[in-house]
Image (cartoon, rainbow, N blue to C red; front, side):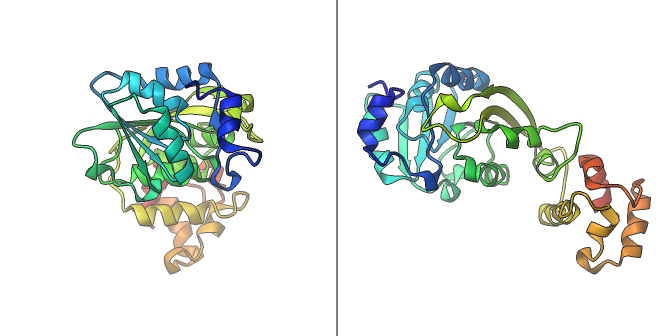
Length: 268
C-alpha cells in the first residue's frame, strides 16, 4: 500500500480530512522521508520510537532499517490504518496511546532513537518530555516547524528554547522541508532537526527552568528588571548576582547564553 499517495490518504479520511486539532499533517514526499531516515543513521541492531506515525509512510521505512520499531499513535482511527499499513512488518509494535503517557523505560531495555514527524503544536513539549525521561533516547531526529528549529539551534541570539534545550542536548538543523511535502499542507515550512542528549551539566532543572523563564518573560527589557522579584529577590540582590556572574545588569536576555545562565543559577 503506497501510503504517501494523496488519493489513498483521501480515501481513508473522506471529505473532512485529518484532524486539525491534533496537528495531523502527513509526510507524503519520498525525498523528505529518505532525508530523515538518512539523518538518523539507523543500524540493523537499533530500536526506534516513532511518535505520531499517522498512516505509516515513515514507519514502513523505519521497519526496513531498524531491528525494532515502536509506533505510538494517539488517534484511534489512525491506529487501525497504521496496523493495516505495517501488517507485514513483524518488527513493528503499535500503541494507541498519548505520547506524553508513554514510558520508554518500560519498553526499551537498551538505548533507542526517536525518529518522528511531530505534531507542530506540541513538538517542544514532547522534546522536553523525552529529554527529562528516566531513559532518554540516544538521539532524536525530528521534523518540526522551521521557525522553532531555528530558535532551538540559534547561536547568534539567545532565546528561551535554545537555553532550555541546550542545557540537556546538542542540536543542529539537518535540512529544511517545504510545506508542500505534507498533506494537508501546513501554513508553515518545516525542518529536520537532530537533537543529541548530553549530561554535561548537573542542574536543579525546575529552578533553572524558572530562572530562564523569568529572564525571557520580556525579551526587550533589561535582565535586572526581568529577574527582579525572582524567588523574592530584590532588584539590588539581582544586580549583585549579575555582577558576580560577570554580566552587565543592563544586558538584555538575547545576549545571555547557556553558560551565563548556568553560572547565574549558582549565584542568585
